Image 1 (cartoon, protein in one colour):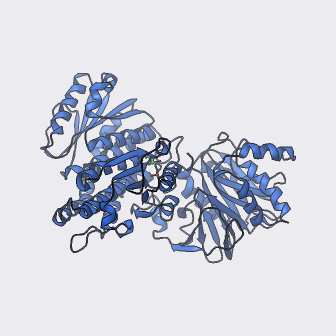
Image 2 (cartoon, rainbow, N blue to C red):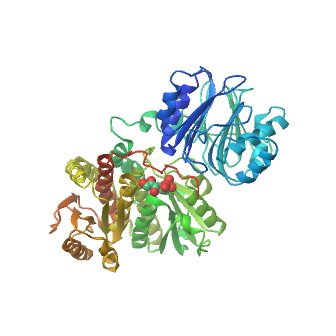
Image 3 (cartoon, helix red, strand yellow):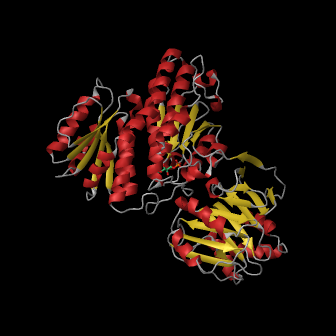
Length: 612
Ligand code: F6R
């Protein structure tokens, strides 16, 4: 939700700012803008629509200056127009602000500021901050850091803010509350951004920031202070991936690249997790055997695709560790008096580590005394920082808005947790764990196999491009796969797609089946699986009502009546989501391409959902 970047140093600032915005555009693409720190008066350009509109507007007119801020927007308050695009300015045009998040008390601020004579030119919540900072800066004799400190004390909501003033253009001041901000420390130049991808091509040294910490940077210094003005020692870390990880690498879209990166992402997440004496190594959980044995239940909280990884967790953890697991959509969790206490382990799953719904659920769980374990793909993001423990997935940067490789690694993480808990509980022997882990290690090769044979599926998909409804059926561990297949299709192809548990079909959804309705059925893994026959009956039921059926089934399974069977390698049934999800990702991708949609930046969405 909005990408933010700031630069100060020897380069012509528009170069790193535009490069950074390109990498952050996945966070929002309703409008984009920059403010450059020309002395005396800022140079500002902003345009509705994608970053390319801003770039065209900048072509001839750019001054070569050495500091500035840039923004790419996912609209909340005020439509996606040029006027509502960031940066927002004070009335003198000397102070510019960019913002990610929501200022909840903006109406009262606006009324008070208008009463003092400030003239507003947008419908945004952000503009009130520009006017407020302008007044506060004057009160502090031109000290923007002090002004920001006082502003933050009156602002409510979630925000990352960056500000620049024309009287001291080499200085940029930033702050974060419940929204992401990282500092990139270069040689004679410094950066601030929503995430490290914005500056990774210039530096690998980053500083993580805590809540309400204020950063003041110029080309040679970065000073972090708290709300009382006390200096805070920077927590520096080295970014472990390089710039090429955030580029398309010859693929037509990030999503396709990320689908093809899945074997590696899964392998990297599994690496080094079994000791020589067959113990699952998850030291980062920080839980003793006794603590695990005293757990009464596990609650998984997550949103969207990550929620589907949570559903898989229920099947795996209950099966192996015999601990009851409930899975809840994070945005619902804290509004229903959930029964949790110190005997509950709450697992929060989030690729970005910034999803506000999940973060709020984490806080709620912690305040109720539960221990919170995060599964996260983004180092030093807010959710892991606020959790008691974190298990990082190693998917690498996921740029496409639709999540693919992150999901598979989240599922691997829940398998590892399930095995670890089972070992502590004694519900699986070391030998069993050894066997299961070895089978996990075979998954990257099996995903590879699927990816080598997706061409016919891509061709088949194109035949369905004009359909406006696709239904997905699954049972047992295939049910979350069906939900994920439908979610991917909705967000990418913009069509009606629903995932159902096969058994529910006759309780209503079967009425949706009409002549030619495509139904994708995920046949349960394991030939002896009792549910196999039930799903085969479901296939016949929908076929009898005119559906065109595509089946995802293990090699060697014969399915009658299917128009097309997509085969996936044989695996332990509980591992099936890792394989069965992949063709569905390809299906959704290809549908989006065939319908002429923007695959990497689907309409109305943003990668990191930092509002509730
Ligand atoms: C769907 C998708 C979203 C995210 C959800 C949670 O493809 O990407 O549904 O899974 O917004 O995001 P994180 O995992 O960052 O908390």
